[in-house]
Length: 115
Image 1 (cartoon, helix red, strand yellow):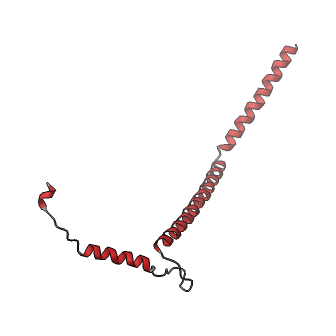
Image 2 (spheres, rainbow, N blue to C red; image 1 turned 45 degrees about the horizontal axis):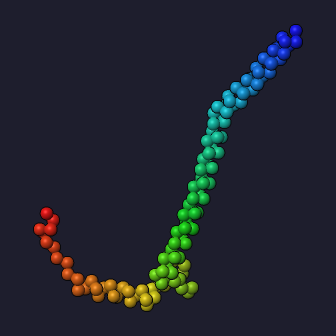
Image 3 (cartoon, rainbow, N blue to C red; image 1 turned 60 degrees about the vertical axis):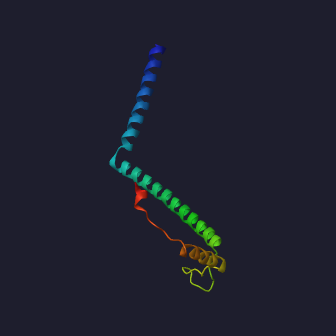
C-alpha cells in the first residue's frame, strides 16, 4: 500500500513539474515574449556599439595628440578649436630639406626594364 502511494505521489509530482516546465517554455515562445527578447538584445547590442564607438573616439583623440606632439603641431589657445597652428621651425626645415633633395633627382624610364 505504501508503495503504491509513493509511486502515485512521485508520478503526480513529475507531472506537475513537467507541466510547469512546458508552460514556461510556451510563454517564452509567444509573439509578445519573442518581441521583448529581441528588443532587449537590440538595446544591449546598441549599448555595446556605443561603448565601442566611444573607445574608438578616445583612441583616435589620443593618437592625434601623439602625432601632433611628434610633428610639432600644437593647438594655439587663441585659435578656434577646429584650427591648428602652423608647424614649428623644426618641421619646416625637414620639409625644405626634403624638397631640395628631390629637386636634383631625375627619374628616367627604360622600357627594357619591364621585360
